[in-house]
Length: 473
Image (spheres, rainbow, N blue to C red):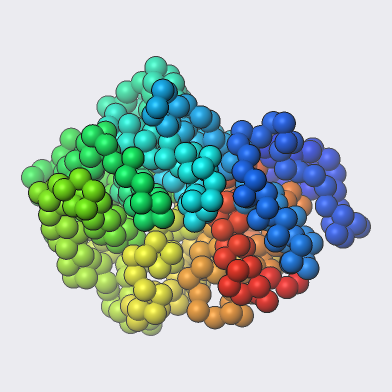
């Protein structure tokens, strides 16, 4: 996946941004228009625009107001496409500068808007349409992570050595690709009581989800999925004949790739297995209460319990300094990998996904480990500190990790520091990015990455409503 385009210097780039020079040092509080022009926006929500006005009116920090205006609506402005057919709402959501829809990214991009759907019918239909679209995609192939809106398109990865089909952008098997659509559908239902998405197409997608999870427990052999790519980048392919390194079938689920789209070293990715536990139970609740499908619900719940027991037995290790903490990956044979990756799900983000309580003792010890230099992908520089990952490489911090640190913190001063780091590291663009160099925010990757933009907007609105004092300059 092409996610390593570096942008340097202080020119402004992005979807709808003006490519003009701007120096914050010379002209503080004079902020250029970088948001997409009104007549070029893909979607408009009066409710979201009113939120922006309210935030800017009541938050004294003008730069923060400017960032909020640019970031919160970025998904709506630039990435959504209405594909409604007749009475069936369908929404296609690209990730930003890559013209494809990831099941994970698209779910996360619209997530901050769910809390407002009862106040905005158009916004509600947009999310309903995405749930429907994701169900259709999963039924094409539950092992694929990203799709095109054109079902006949053969993209840049069509030559991968796996069972590619037209309309699929990439076929990297990642547990979270099937978890995020459940999270979106479940919370849409809880917010609206609307059962429209839960038709036969959705139920079939749940059946495929359960089947895929069970196949990837690898109790009955390696399963049907294998993947290899002709590439010089080792993290973009699977070793050992396209199946990855061996695992011991102990009840955990293999995730061949991480949420970063990098391959796993040890196949049992613990953050994603914990996410799967939550998702299976959420799906089961819908199946039981909406569809009266007790049989499938019970299978979902049984698998959730099995995975939970396996995580507790194999996914927690004794660290010589931090004590009992979660490993990042394990193989069930006794080997484990100690690190964290900035993408969500991560160990850091587990409370954000409702996978564990932020006051859980194992989580607190794990959090202390991953926010220390004992985590090989925790970087600390003159500009900021945070978590990166192999996807971009050394010394590149992901704003997403700083946002997750704020979301999962119980310390107001830590949250305040995260807010200020985010404010100071947008590289004079007015937007968040995939990553930036720990010593130079103007060296960043992905000028248009809607997931991080809307995630930033979600954090800012939460703090504005709950702890506005932490937004002060």
